[in-house]
Image 1 (cartoon, rainbow, N blue to C red):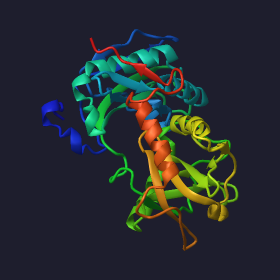
Image 2: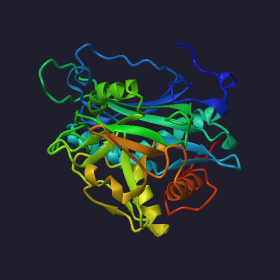
Image 3: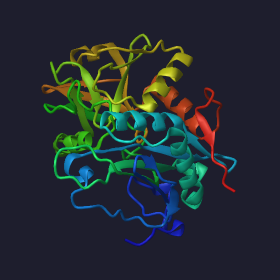
Image 4: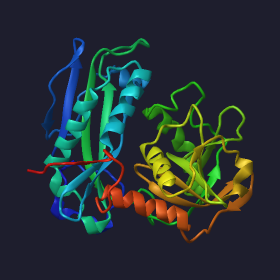
Length: 344
């Protein structure tokens, strides 16, 4: 694959797809310690055919974004939280966690090296960063690896869901995203591989994605496709599900804080699929999706419509506007949420 050139991109019409940019960061773990990492132009990974990551799924990843400010500078949104979550995910899979401070430095190096690919402020796009940690040890038995590779690559992206901030329809799934006590709270590839079939079924049926219910009773909302769920009650309270198998979304915890700031009295609690009537608005939230309004959820053939199937609710819009304004540097957010990337 040839390298992407910035001159070939239409930054005003980006989708959410891979581009082979000039630089990425790599570091390797051998003999019980991380070796010094560096930028490289090589986008191909060399792995043993018996690498543990390939056979037994010992790999974790992250996703975060860099944003071009109006003054031409660049912000990264809460990279320390992604670094911490990756460390927790690695611990769950018995992997050597990449040092959190080095994670943030690596991300900034990749952003700086690929700065010409950061979409302009007015485009509404961003530079998506994908840190990846995988076991490269050649094993054929089910054993944790002892050698690891950490890499960060980037690509300019537009909206994850085509249409941007437009309500879409979801449907409950008979499949489970993750088991209680499993790897639901870790960002591991296997969770996403398992979601492909139910997601494809939903798309073929005309839905944006699926609603996963809890794996024990199939009653309580867990996640929406690859994003967290939120609902805003008729009296203005922000609610999001609480469960041991939900991925702790950086966006979710950011919106919980902003909902408090906006007087929405936020809470994490179990939310039954049979209690959707309490919500005036609903949405999906995550790094890729940011906020995607949910127009309707269909469960057991019954369709529940929230605020509108075509228009964004006022409180969802207010949360989106506040979050985006912080990410792009138009408004000041809570201390430490935004980190500047020196470009020179």
